[in-house]
Every structure is written in C-alpha cells, then in structure tokens.
Amino acid sequence: MRVYLVGGAVRDHLLGHPYHEKDYVVVGATPEQLLAQGYQPVGKDFPVFLHPKTKEEYALARTERKSGQGYHGFEFYTDVSVTLEEDLIRRDLTINAMAMDDDGKIYDPYNGQQDLADRLLRHVSDAFVEDPLRVLRIARFTARYKSLGFTVAPETLALMQQLAESGELEALTPERVWKETSRALMEDHADEYFETLRVCGALKVLFPELDALYGVPQRPEYHPEIDCGIHTMMSLQQACKANYSLDVRFAVLMHDLGKALTPVDELPRHIMHEERGIKPVTEVCDRLKVPTHTKQLALAVCKEHLKCHQALTLKPGTLWRLLQRLDVLRRPERVAAYVQACECDSRGRLGLENREYPQAQYVLDAIDVVRGIKAQDLPADIQGPDIGEMLIQRRIKAIEELKARQTVSIV
Image (cartoon, rainbow, N blue to C red; front, side, top):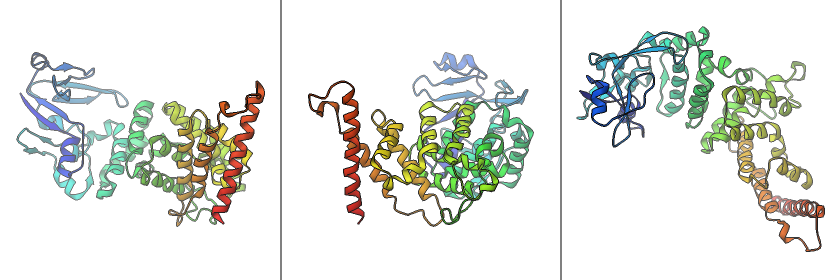
C-alpha cells in the first residue's frame, strides 16, 4: 500500500500558494485493509475514507468511465492493480495531476510542473470533455491565479467551448453551479471567472441574464466605460479589492441586470432599470438556489441602489423610508452591506475608481442615529399607536439634524 498527497495541495505547495485541504490517494490497497486500520468510509460513489486521527480524505486509486450525462454520469473502478498514473490521468488539469510521497518526491507523469512554470491551465486528456463541471473549475482557477499570470491553454479553451455548445452544462445541478460560483466570487479577481465563462460561451448558458448585459450601452457622461457588462465587472473588481463579503459581491454582480431589458428606443438611458431588474435577479437566485439572505441583499441593491447614490439630496423622510424598507431596525448589517455594494457600483466606472463616495458615511451615520432612538426614551404620556408615530417623527428629525451637519461639513 502506497499513499500520495495529490491534487490542489501539491499544486499550491509547488506554487508557494497557501492551502488548507489535503487529499490523498491510496495505491495498492483494498477497502478492507483501510477499514482494518481504522479508516472511516464516507464515499458513496467510490471508496473514500477519513483518516482515523486527522480526518483527512483518503481515496483508493481509481479509473472512471463516462456512463451518462452531467457531473454524476460516471462509473468508477477501483482495484489494487490501478496505478498512480491511471488515477492521475482522469484529473482535469496537468497542474492538478501531480502527486507527492512522504519523502517529498514529486510524481508528474503529465508535465504539470512545466505548465506551472509556463503559467498554463491545460487539460490532462481529451476525457476533459466528459465532465461539464470542469468548465466552471477552470474558470475559477483563472480567478484564483490571475495575479500569477495564468491563462487557459488554447486547446483547453477549445474543449471548454465544445462543452458549452454540447448541452452538457445544463445537466449540472444548481447546487454545483452555485458552489463553484460562490467560491469564485471570493477570489481576489472574481471578475475573471465570469470573463472566462463568457469567452468559452458558458456564461450565456449558465448566466444568460448576465451575458445579456454585454453590448448594452450606457450614457458616457455617467459611464465612460459605456458597456453594461464591463461596468458590472468593474464594480465586482471594486468589491474584491475591498474584500467585501460573498453577499455584497453577489449583489454587485446582480445590481444592473435590468439594464439588459431596457427597450432599444430608450438607450443609452435606462429609466426604471431598477424595477426591471427584480425579475431577472429573482430568476437567477431561484434557479441556482442561492441562500435566502444572499438573495435578499441582491434584490435590495437591485431595487434601491440609485437611492443610495442620491442619499445626500434625499429628504430626511425619504431616507427614513428607504432605511425602513431595508429593515434597518432588525438588520442594520444588511443596510451596511447595501451601502458597500452601492459604493462599488459608483466606483466601478472607467476613471472613477478612486472617486470619493460621501453617501456611504452619511447613510451609515443615519443607521446609527435612527437606531439610537428607543421607545423607552419617549415621554411617559405617549401611549398606544402614538408611540410608533412619535418614533418615526423623532427618527426623521434625527436624520434632518444629521443632514444639516453633513451640509455644513461639505461646505
């Protein structure tokens, strides 16, 4: 029995890139042997075991054969006769098809080290096209390793295009698409994930609402970058640069979907695009089974982002009603996330990436002042329905005073 560290851990070890998960492959062993040593079985489709102490995953060396459609359409074969090379060739990229033994010796039958040096994402074999999930994985790797200069090998990109055109992507489960997408969104260059999907034709299959933004013009005096798709990616870059949460990054990605639905005769203006965006944002979230709290923020940003941009000129009562709609009293953290997403939208424009956005601090201060007004602070003679009305009046008054201070500060 021989044990090797495989996959991403070996790749990132050689790159000097941080990693946390370790996967091992076991060659020349049977399930019974691992069970006898205290390993715990967890694999459903093929034998995977948890180490009795570290709880890291150990999989028996295996080969696979395409037997159906989609990510799960495979039959696996494990036997003591399966070699390390046979196990590694079924992997997606050469840089993921390397192994390392306990002595630190690298096994690299498919030239992964050379592709690491050349900064190339290249498929191991033509079996690449048997698994549609690999399109998303490669796109995610482009986001992760953008700063290191990695690009997709032309022949691999051709296979990704083949998969996008084959209909296989439609067999991916919503859970798998969301898992890969959410992981990609948390990379420093998340925009590269969507750009790669667009180049290979997968974006129009998996995210048609997002793909439809490309080529849609905006008014150049407000958006020097003009193209709605480019603006969305520039806004996402801002969210990544600020290291904002997944919810904020996703909301930024979704915030302008309504612009793809603007009637042609109204372009390049986008009147009512916030309201038009509610339907496509909802459809994306429902299709991918996006978590409820993530969906709620995306919808709020889509519908209300212009109000944040206008915050300094809004009447105090109007700002209070906006904060109410965002559920400021129960979920102040959602309002703060909303502000972050709107700031990314404002800065996601060509030449305006470092522009000041005083609206952010103003709205954050408004959150504090309205939440600081409590029912127990009202006069004792205020009772029943009058309590609610008095609270509203005092909160609007507090915003009015905040606005006055803000105006003085600006002057």
